[in-house]
Image (cartoon, rainbow, N blue to C red; front, side, top):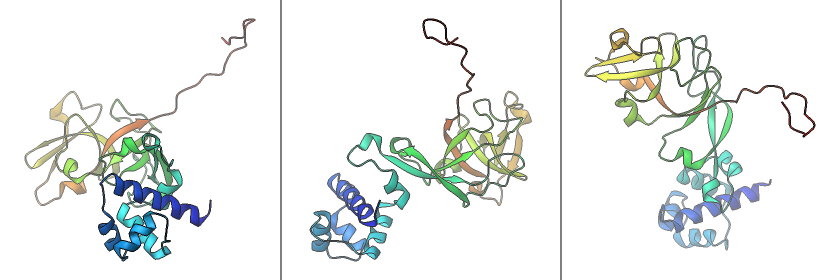
Length: 231
C-alpha cells in the first residue's frame, strides 16, 4: 500500500462522516487550516491535501494510520479498528502500564462504539480472578472516566493495587471503595476497603472490562472411520 492510497482512504472516511452529519465541511476546513471551498474540493477528489493537512484531518476524525489500514471501505458493519494492546499482562508479577504498547489488535468498530480510549490486554495467571475470566484471556477495556467514577457491582474492573493492576469486582459506598475477588465475592464483609478521602477514584479504577476473548481448547483429532469422520 502506498501513501496516496492511505490519503484516499482518509478522504473517503471524511466524506462519509460529513455525509452522515457527524461533521461539517466548515468544521473540517477550520481544523485542517484550509478554506471551506478547498475542503469541498478535497472531499470531491478535485484537489489534494498536503501531508500536514492530512495529519490535522486525522486528528479531527480521531483516527490513526492503523485505523485506516484495518478499514474495509464501504462496509460500515464490518469496519475494523486497530486498538492498542498493553505491553505487559494484567495480573500478579507484571507491571502493566496503560501507556506502553506492543502493537495493535483488530476489533470490529461496532464493539468499540461509545467506548472511551479503548485498549486491549492479556490477563496473567491469578488464583482469585473473577469467575468469568481466565489466564491468557484477551480483554477489551473502556477507560470512560464517568463509568470509572461510579463503578457498578455487576461489572468487572481493572484496579490499581499496591502490587500492580488486577481484574476485580467493585462496590462503591460513600467515600469507601470495596474491592472483591472470586474468593471473597460471596461475603462482602471480606472485601478490601479503600478510603477515597483525599484520593481520586480514577487513580484506582483504571478501566472497565467490556469484552472477553479466549482461544478454544482443542484436542487432536482421532483417526477417521470408514465414513470419513474423525473420532
